[in-house]
Amino acid sequence: MSFLRVLTFDLMDYGEALRLQEELHQKRVGVESENTLLLLEHPPVLTLGSSGKMENILLPMKQLEQAGIAVYKIGRGGDITYHGPGQLVGYPIIDLKERGRDISRYIRELEEVIIQVLKEYGLIGERIDGLRGVWVNQEKICAVGVQVRRWVTMHGFAFNVNTELSHFNYIIPCGIRDK
Image (cartoon, rainbow, N blue to C red; front, side):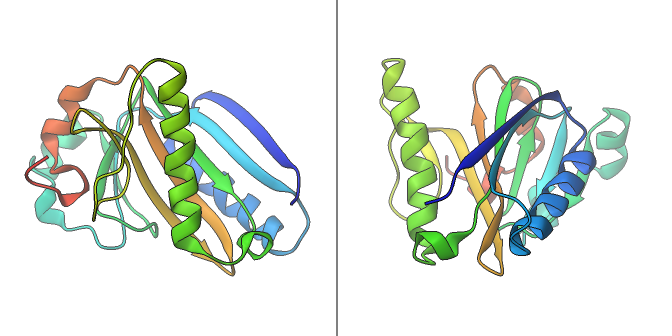
């Protein structure tokens, strides 16, 4: 098991964070750097994953633009989510060859870390069968969406700590209508 370097940032533009992930991913694939975890927040932004559907964005693009909310189509799994201030976003850049090349296990481990953090604060986090992420009282508190290329991860989790939840009204989060 290799060392995990943790880099923390304040508010970071999504495009800048994506470029940093790409750079770190490329270095990790080339074994030029160690496993890295980026922890940060974003200004308001929507990200549409590889299985995302534009109809899950409920506002016209012009209205989102006027509200200062950018939209990015990205390569992670999943549908659409919102990122914004008050949400802790984690981007692990980890070589899964060292962890058995098991993507499902990796996702469960990410979820388990969040469940354990919640437990430290007296909250009960849980998984819901058939859905990714972590839930408290049937409400999603942490989204998980990853991308793995050449067995090195990108993207990760979005943990709602003190997030302006009204922005989730602009979308059908993760494409899930009944949660």
